[in-house]
Length: 358
Image (cartoon, rainbow, N blue to C red; front, side):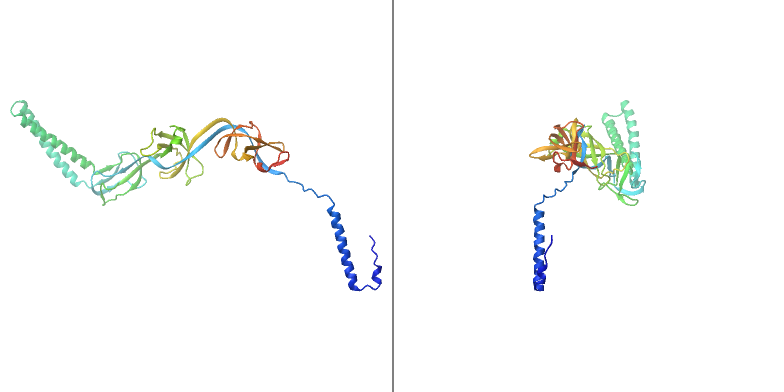
């Protein structure tokens, strides 16, 4: 385009020239904008939706219900001495393993020994007198009453001797079970009494959880059912357990049923007193179509799943069954082997390709 600038030599002032140039620039810009407005818009290229996929499988699905409880030893004993006395010797310490009948500690038996010896003498004297009286009675030399009196004295002496022997034996305190010493509350020179346990023993070779089951669950479980046990202080991995006992009636004053769960502890890492969460199988279905729960989403009030053929998705309506939050049962709408979208399915459009990522 040729522009005639001859007017610049016809006496135009410098100011007028600048104004003319500015007007010219505005005109040029306006023309370009008008031309651009009539050009078609550029269509931005749409990036495919990124998705992850999985396959519909035939599997077994479980639903679980949580319980809580404390892990206890199967057998434990709090040992209280039968008589009070000063401790003269201690034969075990905390953490020791003892067998049933093992000597734990001894009490001062001086008085018990004296009492036993006196009872033994009295018993022997009464027995000698009774034997002589019995012989005389058989010969008819004494009356029945004299015989019965001697017999009564002998029986009383025998009972006194038994009591004295028991009292003497009580000075030697032994373990009633096999297990580990879990507490030791006596020492040489201290006074042991019936006021508090002197020693506690626990058999931790086997552990159990005593808990209770609601009336909702009681009809869905039985003795021998496996359970999963989670102990957060040890591991996120479940330990195995079994319902070993189940009450047929609720505990007095409650609507819950006492239950005992045995705990498998092959490595010995589970300790008595730990807090545990138990997952009990409350529902189970075998040989059903299963997919990840996250693959199902709601659209227009219906449960939908996005299937994939090549790169093209398709939305299908499904009917679901048991859902444990991780896996869901598919009753209708899919078949085994179908490829489904697990993440990103809410953003796919039928007929528009998607990008599958790992």
